[in-house]
Image 1 (tube, rainbow, N blue to C red):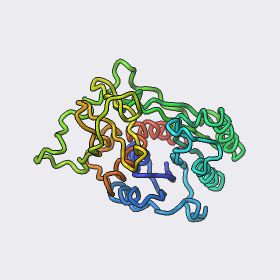
Image 2 (cartoon, rainbow, N blue to C red):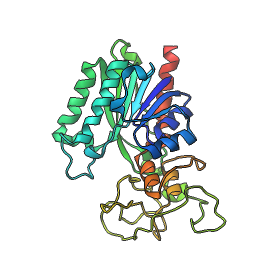
Image 3 (tube, one colour):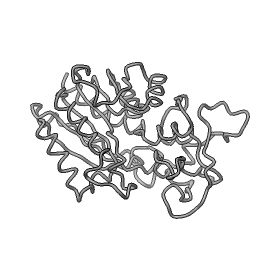
Image 4 (cartoon, rainbow, N blue to C red):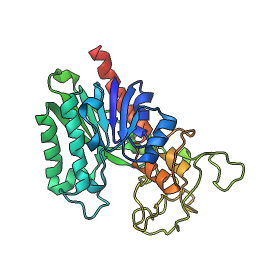
Length: 307
């Protein structure tokens, strides 16, 4: 299918969809480092601009619109989250483009906090908006570890099918490929990766935060179990401007940008642009490529029927 991607970031979801056989014909993000990363690794079709400044006629017609609209205001980690958070309103831009371009399908990705925001009223409002725009809407929370990603990352996918399509053409969520007993561990995912300080290492972006390892029961500070999937790779900092990277499975340091990207299932040759903090944020904001590919495979099934 021909896909328009909004809030694309470094292109995690887009790369997964491309691997499933789709074509990203237009993409957008506001962050200049993310756009440079995207151009280097995926293509020149990304427009670096505030989505609010982009008119509908500047966006090509497409089969699908996808996007993970900024989720900081929805995050369970944000104790001040509220329905009127300015960042939450960016989903209205996503809505504007869905309503205006009328793609056959849309997929929106967000954190699970969106389900409890404003006592559940936020997700009801979002569903109603898209329903009024002409779509049958469904949503579900997914743990990406159930899909072969070496990370317990829970995200919500909101899927819409245009109402003029028959119900048998509704987008169907992918079924899990892994059970808890055979989740991919962080140690397995990082097998063979040398230490960043190894002079023989030629890996790109293999630099890491020197932020102190402190094993306490707090987000980003918990001891990493080498025999389980990684905790959620974070995009947020430690409150002082730094990045709070997840601890390496040996718990002797923080994971490098490269290691964090491997946990997000980015290809090992994928190169990030920007400062170390910027690169960590790009990785943490991304949809794991492998999970994006599972979503893309379900779209491919629909494309075969549409054809």
